[in-house]
Length: 150
Image (cartoon, rainbow, N blue to C red; front, side):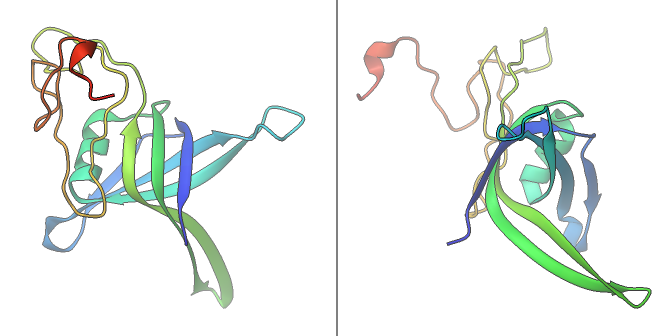
């Protein structure tokens, strides 16, 4: 089983390019605090996301944004100038936006919601940004906790 879960902040703005069939590809660097180190230190993990998820990353995230990433670890290598170069990255299945965003007039913001999953899962289905009502497309807005099934 190859499952990775990270929570951290973007160390730089996401880099997004478009590949074959106009598929969006986002490259992120997530700084994850190392709580086991004696001094303040972070690990910088490279993350790649694809498709609608990558488009939403480009639209909503920037350096410093807090994210949660669920995906799989990928180890690879290539040859450069006669040297074998090894790389490690996380291929994201899902990226959660963890910053608390306040709604501003007319921008269709997140309505003060914490987080939001913009990118879906390995099934390829993706949630879209919240409409003016504050609930993401495909989700009903709940007015009180009496409607919760638990």
